[in-house]
Image 1: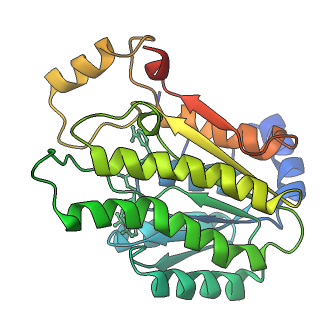
Image 2: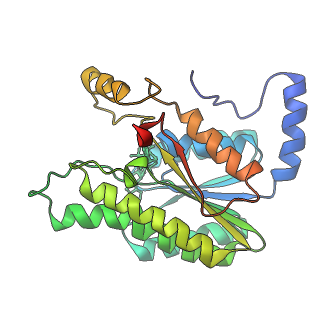
Amino acid sequence: MRPNHNVFPRDASARSRFASKERRASNQVVFITGASKRLGREIALFFANHGMRTALHYRHSKKEALQLAEQINRARPGTARAFQADLNDVRQIKKIVAEAGEYFKKIDILINNASIYEKNQFGKTTLDDWDRHLNANLRAPFFLAQEVIPWMKKEGQIINIADWAGLRPYADFIPYCVSKAGLLCLNTALAKALAPRIRVNAILPGPILLPEKSSPRFKQAVIEATPLKRIGAPKDIVKAVAFLVESGSFMTGAQISVDGGRLIA
Ligand SMILES: NC(=O)c1ccc[n+]([C@@H]2O[C@H](COP(=O)([O-])OP(=O)(O)OC[C@H]3O[C@@H](n4cnc5c(N)ncnc54)[C@H](OP(=O)(O)O)[C@@H]3O)[C@@H](O)[C@H]2O)c1
């Protein structure tokens, strides 16, 4: 099933439920990294659909990020804005967090979603392969958290989008898997450092959106390796984000697997 991209629900009772949720949430500001496409875009639309304001980070996907901001602003003017940065550069992280904080006057929720995922054969992995994964997937979430915290005026939340493969690594993706394992450690450490004011939790997706050039054979092999015998949908991750935000008030330092059972296979 395709996720719902409408910013407002059509039927009257859904609109009224939406309106009351919207009133509660309307002041909240969410900063989402890698928000222009794929899972980040779905997460951003979830927050926009719930009346929250969204800071949409992108790196190269400017067109998609601006279109998303425009789509959200058409329904609710001034509630979304795109911010460009290469997260491998800590100075750019500081710059966009300051820009988003000044624009929205606060940040309530940080979603560390952006990441790179590349195959790196052992024996042929370069220093650059290692640094790009560790910098984008681990160093950036740490510095994003450090920059965002002063903008979290009262309570706040950080959600780290990790990977089940951070706990059960693939041999051909060592820099990626190590970066996600480090992100899980960062999740625990930040949860301790920032309690009781700020909750920090991780979601560990399994196969949801395969890399764009995946072959039908690869897809079938992934399905076979997944106990629930299917690929997940972006809405499965969005529901986990929604659960943490709406119902997770006694949760911090948690790791939620949404992986079709990959972790236990
Ligand atoms: N897709 C899955 O099935 C799956 C499975 C397990 C875990 N996950 C995790 O879920 C999250 C989202 O997955 P996804 O597949 O939707 O992600 P994705 O498409 O691989 O990447 C999301 C975005 O990250 C941004 N990005 C990458 N390197 C960056 C850098 N150095 N600086 C700034 N932005 C950078 C890119 O933004 P631009 O396009 O603007 O350059 C990209 O669009 C990731 O953390 C991923 O590890 C996904």
